[in-house]
Amino acid sequence: MYQTNQTNQTWVTEFFLLGLSDDPQTQLLLFVLFLVVYFSTILGNLLFISLVLFDSQLHTPMYFFLCNLSLSDLCFSTTTVPQALIHMLSGTKLISFTGCAAQVLLFLFFGSTQCALLGVMSYDRYLAICDPMHYTLIMTWRVCALLAIGCWFSGLVASLVDSTFILSLPYQGDNQIAHFFCESPAVLVLASADTHKTELIIFFMGVVIIVTPLSLILVSYVCIIISIIKMKTTSGRLKAFSTCGSHLIVVILFYGGAIINYMTPKSSQELGKIISVFYAVMNPMLNPLIYSLRNKDVKRAFRNAVNRTPFCRT
Image 1 (cartoon, rainbow, N blue to C red):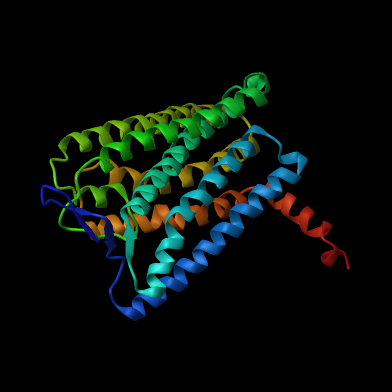
Image 2 (cartoon, rainbow, N blue to C red):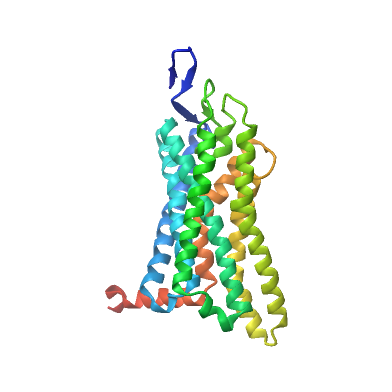
């Protein structure tokens, strides 16, 4: 758990995750809830990705970006939930320093990638609604691929910068993380040195990876709303609102939690854990449901896929 060097300084080699509750019955209830949510996340996102891959009518830029979002959701959830499930079931809540470092890095990577993807998706909707005549000329498959690569690359850079500053700090003495996984703010409070510089770096990276895409989203939707108001037909307005409504719901759910945990003054640890449950555990499950339930194309693709199965034909 601790390692002593030649200067008699005790370095943390393992962390103890306090989790969401110490009560055995509550932990069992949470285990069942997290397990159901995780399997729903896996099945929902894999199903969505499969529908887009195998239905040619869904081979459009919007669904290409949604596939990337589903993939990041799968990875985002897998980074934290399986470890939390093991801890809830076994009662052993230890995680090695290396394992914790990997969790910090991967969580930041996939979370930052989602921020960038949501920004790119708002730009895609802006072009589709505000400039439909030039949409296909601008959003070519080459451009879509470059934008997607840029999202993943920006997520990687942001995670490397943040995790490098967080994990390079000395951790001595207290090794109890008041969380159910190694999230940056919860780990940072255990550092045995001044964290002001690291907090400034995290805030700056938050501006780059959270505020910048969010600003793009806000500007895009102001233009979209103006265009929708100018539409003469009610059916056109409803179709435009339907196309953008799902994206807005996902943006509000994800960005709300990320801003509170990473860009506001330190709140209570309990509040931080609850917020993390929503955007780290629940959100990856809700995303495919939100896009599927409000989307006629996805519903049609799902019905076609069901009708093509041998069991349903018999």
